[in-house]
Length: 328
Image 1 (tube, rainbow, N blue to C red):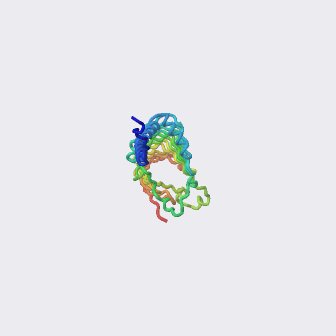
Image 2: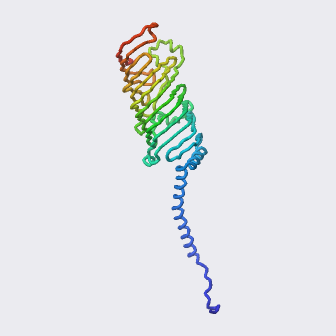
C-alpha cells in the first residue's frame, strides 16, 4: 500500500477525552466509596480488637483529650480492658484511680446503652470543689436546678471498688471496699445492690460559738445543704463497720441495712435497720437536707447503753418514738 493510501493519525476530539476522563473519575470514586469504608472498618477493628491497636488508641486519646491520662496494661477496647492507672480533671473536679479493669458489651451502643459486665477499681480518689466549678450564665440561672440526664442508659452488672476516697468541699466519704450493681436510666439511678466495708463519712459543721450558745434546739442546724441532681433509688444497701462523724460527734455502726430514695434535698427512708454502739434500731421517715434539716421519723429502738448515764450504769429497754418538728 502506498503512502498516499495510509490513514492519518487523528487526534481524539475534546468531547471524547472529556468522556474518558469522566469515566475514569467515576471508576475511582466507586472504588473509593467501596474501599475507604472497608479500610476504615479494618483499621477500627485492629484498634479495638487487638492489644497493640488498643494501646495505640489509648495513646491517641491521651494526646487528643485534654486533662485525660490513661496507662494501658492489657486487653482490648471491644471486650476486656485493663489499665495501670487513669486520671481526668476539669475545673472543680479531679478523678484518679489506680488499677482499672473493665469488661463491657459494645453491641449495646447500637441501642443507646452502655452495658458494663464488670468494673474493678483500686485506690480511687475523687475531689469536688463546688466553688471552682464553671459558672452558669445569669440568664440560665434556672438551669442550675435542672436534673442531670445522661444521653444514654447505663447498666452496671457488677462493680468492685477498693480504697475509695471522695472529697466534696470539706465533706469526706471513704470506703475500704464497695460492691455495686445499678442501672442509670432517664428515670434516675436505680441501685439494685450496694455493699460497703469500712465506710467513713465526715461532715464538718460551722464552728460558731455564738450560734452554739444561741439556744438552738436542733443540733443539725449548721449542716451544709446537700442536693442530689437526679433521682436516686436504693433497693438494697448493706453497710458494714461504718462511721459517721458530724462535727465533734462520732457514731459507729457495725451494720446498716437500708432501702430508700434521694432526690434534690429530700431523703426518704422506707426501711433502715441499724446496729449501733448504743443498741439496735429500726427507722423509717424522711428528711430535707437543707435549712435546719426538718425530719419526720418513726423509730423502734433497743438501747443497751448510753454514755450520758453514770459510769457503770446500763439500760436494756425498747422504745418506740415518732418525731416531727413543729413549724416556727
